[in-house]
Length: 253
Image (cartoon, rainbow, N blue to C red; front, side):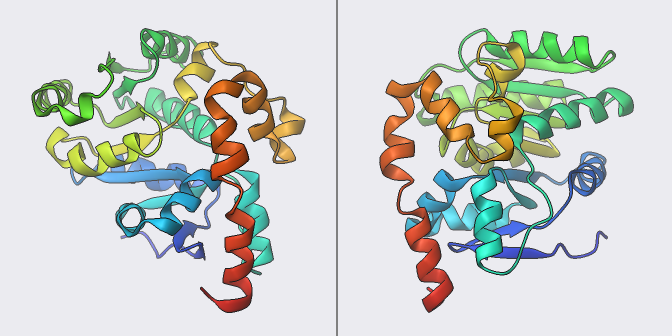
């Protein structure tokens, strides 16, 4: 059994304090087992939503690992005097897991993303990591999560393909909720929602320059790339984050 993971609670959500190497070591162990494990890379948007929703918080409580995907969460941990060692970005983690899967012959499956992008991301990953077994890719239609017949089709597909890792690119909260509700029926040991990672890996979207990533400015880069889709998230929905954080620091709420 793996030793307990040190963590910090930010806005009611547990954030585990692990290095990338430690996450990969634990993930490798999980992929060798049959019980379903859910990994989450958390960001400001998710923590604000969780702060307002006990149902969301419960999903994160049940997850095997919850990691800080975003420099603002590192800032928050320092403000709470419980600093985290490392940021675990979702796209970086996906690439590292695929590198591991190529070495260990763990099949991976890509679910979601814009139409056709999952297959392009899979091809790019196989080019970077020769020998990576791709169990399959599937693009469900908009609103599929409310169609039990389509969900059963996906579950049956995954049971038949037997991936060790399921990557979903369905967005928040859909991807995290879908994994929580359906992973056990898919017989997939490890599942993780990776946001826009399929688009980044396939080249459909360009990642922020490294200097912006280090300074916590990826949100600004994304906003410049997709202003119509993301302005409300970054400029309205996420704004209360530091207010809630300061309230936690000074009142414990």
